[in-house]
Figure 1 (cartoon, one colour):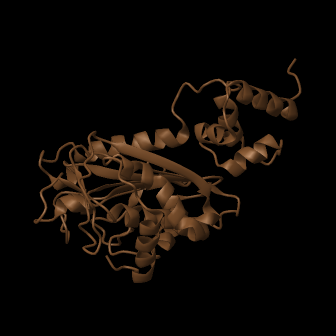
Figure 2 (tube, rainbow, N blue to C red):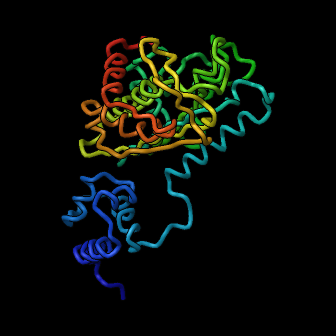
Figure 3 (cartoon, rainbow, N blue to C red):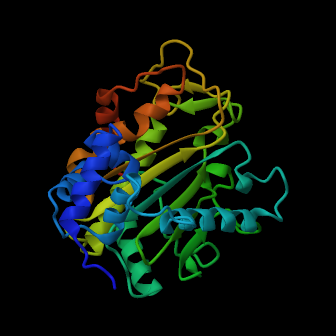
Length: 326
């Protein structure tokens, strides 16, 4: 016999265990990878929560067995990274398409999304990419056959670093690899723009303002993609960034000569990453605060550099005003 599912009792037990473990509501939400409003809805015993979010909340306090395999989103990222390594394996060791000096990866997942076909996915990606804020947008959908996206493994992928393909730029910063799934998961890998210019030695600097622009337009891509698929107001996004090859780089104001970094700020270890969870509908209005929340801990790795919210606000305002400017 299987006992009837007692949702209120399960929530009460989760709250008891949270208190016993000394977790705050915010800490519980962070460990579960959900937003504060989602956890509040859980605490109030609301039954409209998606099953996977409820499972993540319960798993933190030991009420759901830990999975024996990667989460779906984690598996998607692992598959994308494995695929990129397959694509570059026959390239020369010094090929820019290998992004040899480091790279950054941007990933996101929208909740409650499942598209019917790769053709439908392609149309929504085109719609999202039509909102261009810079000259080299994330998840660009080229139309030239040699570099155009194509169906792969039940989704769509695009690799701009293909050898023997005529390209205007053949450096690491223009050798994007991206992948998209029918479930609203996106992965983008790109080399550093700072490593692709003659006046700066590769792997020596990390620009002050470029990450603000690049993550800003990527988060806006998620917003426009959600608009295109007519996502519900309650849809949430899990958005993450990861920077590799940071060891030894110094924080410098290179892309925007009107900015200045005072003092020496160097990164001591190799990689950095962070993530945020929010409602998709909040992105447009709260973009500066979301990007600040995402990037400030990463900038602190450069000898405790304090990334000011005002700087983020000013740079994003410029990005949105210029549209295709930088």
